[in-house]
Structures are given as structure tokens and as C-alpha cells.
Image (cartoon, rainbow, N blue to C red; front, side, top):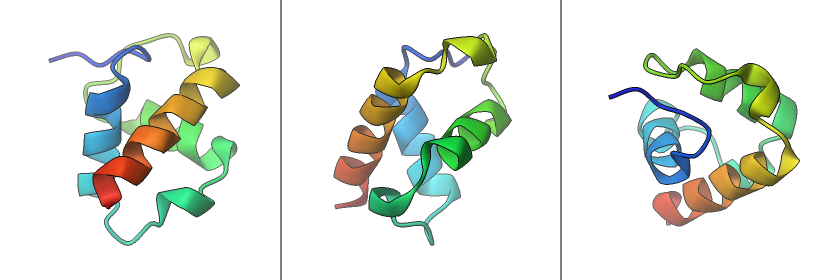
Length: 66
């Protein structure tokens, strides 16, 4: 399954599984953007990963981590 920026929940799940040592409440958007782009099935345009989508991914990741 290919991932795009709109796949907020799936991205959050993969980050939670791949980075269990990271507390998503304290992740800065530069790192978050880089980590999303590094996901194996991520195929979307890096330029589309703006602040709003990163906030949504971070919020979903926080929920996954709880």
C-alpha cells in the first residue's frame, strides 16, 4: 500500500511502530517531515507536507502512543 500525506492515521501508526522510543508530543516538524518521507511506502510530493498535515500526523501519533 502506497502512502500519501492524506493517509494521516496509517502514517501515525507506522511512526509509532517504527519509533517506539520517541515521544510524539516533543517531535519537531522538521524531524517529523523527514521521518514521513523515509517511510518505505511513502510516495507523495515532499512539498505537500505542510504544517497542517504534520500537525494532524502528530496528533494521530499521540493518540496511537496512548
